[in-house]
Amino acid sequence: MGQQQSKDELLYQQVNYGNIDGIKSLRREGAGLEWIDREGKTPLIAACMNPELFNVAKALIELGANVNGYRPGRHAGTPLHHAAKRGLDQTVKLLLSHGASALMMNDDCQTPLDVARSKGFSNVVRAIEDHVCLFSGWLLELYGPGFLNLLAPQLLSRKVWVVILPCGSRNLRKPLKLELVVYNGAQ
Image 1 (cartoon, rainbow, N blue to C red):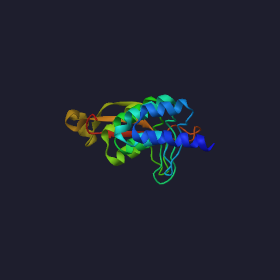
Image 2 (cartoon, helix red, strand yellow):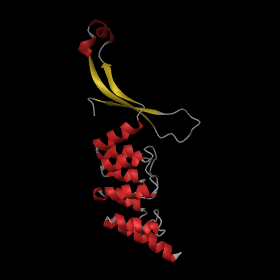
Image 3 (cartoon, helix red, strand yellow):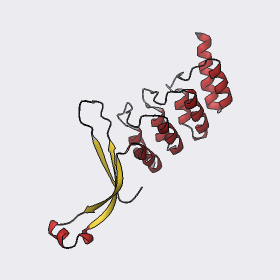
């Protein structure tokens, strides 16, 4: 058991060095991909926190790492939460393309989309929205007194970009909750 744990830990260390060949070799020898360090990070979470480790994250996913592996605690979240928090749009797209849940909440009740919005990473917000949206497109927004809309609707309207997203509803017996996001222009 102790030897297996040390192989798992060694694989984790190879992630931090960016040594893909070492990771693959250790995996062939039976090392696990879900070892957790003292801070609660798996190898994939560690790779998703560093923009220079994109290829390492890709290799770990190809080897079978859990894209929804959860890190509890103060800096909680999945690999997608951590990539979104750092604005790593390519890593976010990689995780989403391999089945990462964009609606899973962390201990602060935030989805990866919420995390990206709070950090102002519009490229990550767009990547997640594109992946989970039910509708996106232009709508005509009318404003002003109702009688003026009848006389001159073109003067009291503007085009807005809208996105309709599912919200993280955990109860399948209740209707799906949706979020309408309105932007001034195409994002």
